[in-house]
Image (cartoon, rainbow, N blue to C red; front, side, top):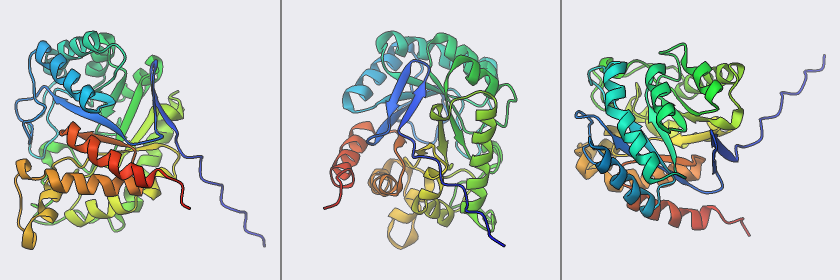
Length: 304
């Protein structure tokens, strides 16, 4: 009996489209973090006033950012949930201010709630960064499809208010095979998005580093990023200053506080680039832009 050949992998993603914006994935791209939350795990990039948001975004773009990610609910482990009305109050004025200041820049809103996404898209956002993988609000996929918005789908094990830092689990999550678990989840969520009407090139996948994974899980997800790129979507890297970075950067397995995690973040981001990630959500735009540009001067050249 002849066993049929497995279907070929989809072609590699070459662009991320979000409404009338297009971000070619022909080199590393930077998504600068702009938080409208008082309780983020790292304060850099946190603003509250629209004028400050516009100025922060201008500096980020001048330093090398390709897009701005604005969020009104912290996703750090242990953070309290924030309702849609408060998220809208926090993020919509910032989205509007950044859009007015930078008409051409791609703006994403970091939310799991469709009412927040709708208000942000009305104010000028182009994409939604949904850390629930569009599982928390059933209206999210249809909304993004109807607005031709870009969508970032992330894997997480549980909601942040019930999660722990990667290096602080009393008992680490047991996936059996973390790569296959994350791959299957992201493939399922991407298929649901396409079925809802989203174009494939409007979708980015995020393996959810630091979200419900132990330190070793996060490192393995970075190492084996090719498993996710072979799904045919661009891959987003969310390494910046996370707890597992501090754990593996310090001597003898000690921890480093978020303020001391920049060197490790740069090193692991470069390795994630080499493994196949193309969009990098970061706090420190100038440093990441330089490190990724230098790495790409080697990685982006054809061998020979």
